[in-house]
Image (cartoon, rainbow, N blue to C red):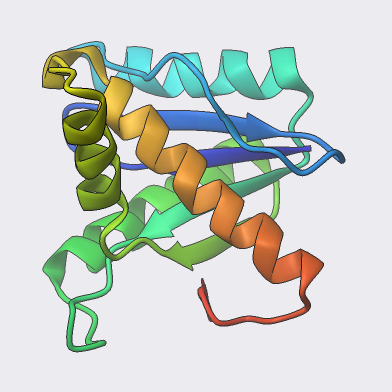
Length: 143
């Protein structure tokens, strides 16, 4: 059972998948309080009985690690300390772009502040991880 996470300073997208292997977006953590966002992650871990956290890792288009990835590293350290669960990093390049393209095709206008885009991005990140496991590749997993 996996919890996918798309970290952002203001919004944290969340998604879940079980042994069936289909990632589904959940309600994003969008509180203005960091403490409340972390509490929502904790509540979601408990509700879904998540055993592993899959975190989108923002690698630059040229493959380098930039300041944003370092912020995610700090967030991951916090997750490990607080929840004591294994964490995998997954290359999230273009995940939000892909989600926005889907909205364009649906002719829908998402409200960014709702966190819906972030949770759909978390579902894409989680699905990439699941498919890498299924096909035994590590193409998207960042070590």
